Amino acid sequence: MAQGKVEICGVNTAKLPLLRSSEKEALFARIEEGDFAAREKYIEGNLRLVLSVIKRFSSSNENVDDLFQIGCIGLIKAIDNFDSSLNVKFSTYAVPMIIGEIRRFLRDNNSIRVSRSLKDTAYKAIYAKENYVRKNMKEPTINEIAEEIGIPGEDIVYALDAIQNPMSLYEPVFTDGGDTLYVMDQISDKKSKEENWVEHLSLSEAMKRLGQRENEIIHLRFFEGKTQMEVAEIIGISQAQVSRLEKNALKTMKNYLTA
Image (cartoon, rainbow, N blue to C red; front, top):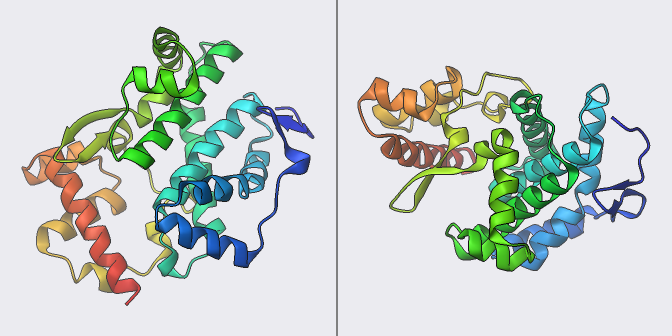
């Protein structure tokens, strides 16, 4: 991995902005109100965090541009899922998310080398898709992504197919009543002190507020590392129901912890 690289993915890292704590709080308040421009500014203001994380992978043979872009996906997911009411610093929450995305990428990336232009097209499509879902609360079609980034639909399909291993983590596999299940929901998440934020919180009392089924789902998912599909088979319900109950349980626990 190249060291001391100033320009990564066309971004001059020497000129990345720094946000003061007051600016971050103000921006996040706007993000929670659905301000897309504030979200973009918050992402840009935290790119230095991604840079600091990818330095941990300096021994990797992966291209620094690839690691940066994957790290940015982790950053975006952290921003979209961060709960400011938990009184946890955003960086404390985001760093494990970024590390997790990069580790999954390194784990899933195979020996097939994909050209730089194909990867760039695929990453642009991923970002456009995430932004579209954020604004419209639904999955875009290939044509809608193509229109957004100005690249023919067939080229996008080809590019996504070329990086299908890492991309498959974020692909929706089933949608039922607005609850979308992604491939990453079917992958076991082996417990890691850096990646599993649940283990950093005292949840025993919060879990007592759950019903028996929800308690069992949380235990299987976050303490035994089971996939949603495996949990569904153990409990005897559908994967969509597991996803819905899991989200409700996490919301209940968060409400208790922040009360």
